[in-house]
Image (cartoon, rainbow, N blue to C red):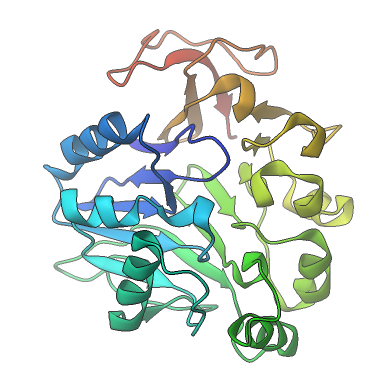
Length: 296
């Protein structure tokens, strides 16, 4: 069974995908002092059974790379994926580690990138089901955005975020947008082929600034939107769609199998839109069962 976890890390993002093959994917990190021990220990336990990990950095903002130096020291980053850039805005230890990993990595995120373990299979390596839908590095809007950042004309790196698809045959399709803002998504949408997806991790932690426009949502047709952590008055709650809000739920775990997703959260929340199945009430990391999504 594949596990996707969205950690409750305050104002920031951190996810992992524990794949059926010998790989572990981390997407961003915001490891603050109060949570560093349990997050590092949980990932260490998973990684004992893996051959490699990949760390996907959506963009170099503090709430997406805090703790990356600690992560590298305690666990090690085998494969570092990021959007190619020359941004150099801060000099904290974590930003310095990001710059080092970025400068030494040849794994630059771009539309339709392909390699073994990531999304190709051969006799030795099986696909992890991760597909990069954006950025198109030749797109004018993307190039303009990156140039502004590299010239220190903008503070936020939100709009160089990639769009990431994870898909499991006869199972879950999930989408991440990093902190991409809605006005930028509308600019580039004709250059992105978005699939129908079961789960969306709402851009920019679910804030109004990242709200996916209704016409795009209707094409994706998500069964569930996960809204990240931010001040409640900054959030958009995606009326008309089933949602889980991390402010309330805290850690969110998706146990994925053929045709269904079993969902666990730190806090018991209203989940009337989910079906109740005869599965474990609690998992080893402490989250409790709230219901299941049937994908068929």
